[in-house]
Amino acid sequence: IVSSLVKNVKTERKNDAAPRVTSEATIVTKRTQVRGDHAHTTYFATFQFESGDRLEMQIPHDRFGYLVEGDNGKLTFQGTRFLDFQRQ
Image (cartoon, one colour):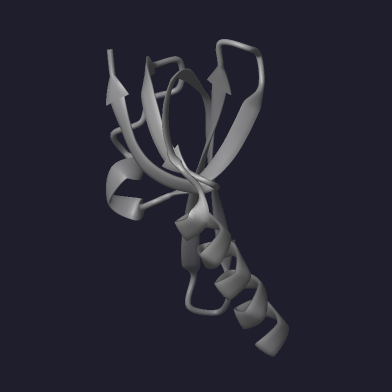
């Protein structure tokens, strides 16, 4: 548990220090991960940039349903932190 907490704090600090980036991207896939006895669900989406690079990001549960595979738009992120996706 302690190791997981330390890892999360390090990731948050890196994200806080990273610049905010907005780039053209396409949603290529979405997935969920269910863990634990209380069915904790984590939501993910994979974005592909014009360069062909892909990035999987954790998505807030209240935004997950609005993202549709194949949609193009402007992805805003900070490090590995999803901030926004504006469909075009």
